Image (cartoon, rainbow, N blue to C red; front, side, top):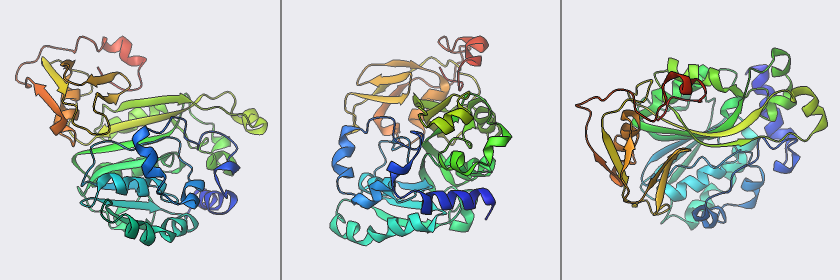
Length: 345
């Protein structure tokens, strides 16, 4: 195990005893948990929740009977939540490299599943590294949905992580994750600091490098769902990284063939309101809210995201890709795209 990974395991396995020990808000949830999740969270043991260090709620909708993989599952909070959402026909796999965290995750699993067996899918926790999912027995094209909650920034080899993600996702499968991003590259002198690393700051991905990485892996269009600025109150940490802007982003991407620009094929889509947790609207990203029953113009990429994925049954898509009308009118062209984190209509 590399020095960075040893430092991370030490920080999350021994240094931190609960989320109260964190020095910044980077590894703390910054958005309000949806109301429908509250009764599900209440069923999860307190110790698991106390040792949860995520920065968001990257739990996608419409995942009943799905196989879901949680990268860097830690104490397993999101896995316990996901198991209730996938239901008895689904499966949740959690992978983490910190034994102390996994011991907490496994500690309550049997009791939890026994108490909720009629409503929950299976949970399987694996000790391993997210850069090499094959060693954990995760096969190619075997996963419907991958989530991660403030963990990918901790990896020293992000290219391998995302390459593995797209290897194991099924065609049309979804990556939905929350993590810390920065508005510039982190200086090399700060990347090895164990506290900054453990606080999810020194490993934060510069948003433009993330865009380049995703493009190199044939994913030119990802979508930002939520964005929140990270507040750094600790004086010593602020002295070190105060010049850098940090943000918690929730991002989704899909495995498929997408274009690097928003192209117009004259298509419209209407949300049917059939996802129980969101009967009135569906938010694909931070600028695509589909109101129930209201047709909305969509670019070719957006049409594929809602018609060739696990969301397909919840939409009525009108039109095909037989006629091309040029660049989608609301894309704004290259000048606008320079100022956006991803290419999207």
